Amino acid sequence: MYMAYSNTNTTHAPHRSASTSKGMTFNSSYTKAIVRFILLAVILGTVFSFGAMVQAYAGDGAANATTPVSVKPINITPKAVVQDQVVIQRGDTLWDIASTHKKSGENVRSYMYKLKTINHLTTSSLKEGQVLLLP
Image (tube, rainbow, N blue to C red; front, side, top):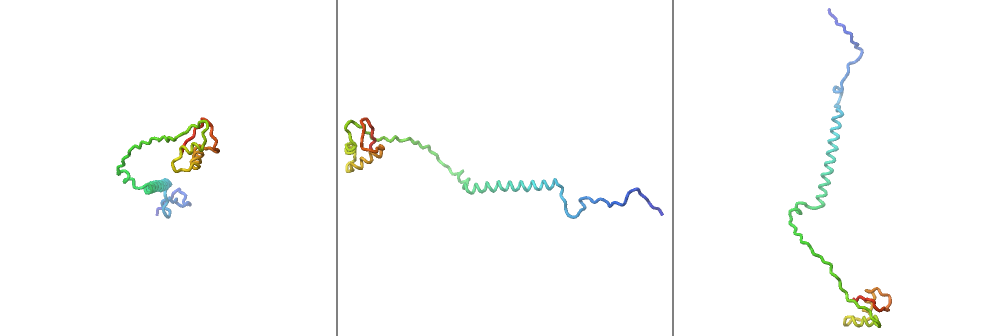
């Protein structure tokens, strides 16, 4: 009978590799790739849903783009308001000015009140050379 001897130490159990363990284990590079993919999908989904919400609230962009709109420039010129003025002469009174320039049928006292209001007068006294705006 023939027996073979070896110099190896047989007291240690053979090594088990990770691929022979129970369940599935992933390499760390695969795990990083999956996390990056999920993160990218979440970001893109957020961006596209935000764009859809903006378009929904802004209205239909296609309808606005195809509708012809004519734009005409508007010439707005400021209109100068010309008010009648009276330059106060020596001896003029507010009563005289009101009775001279009031409309027919209008009360002299109400016209005097308008004169005071427009010209920011607190009293009925006038000075020579003073300019009053007429209502």
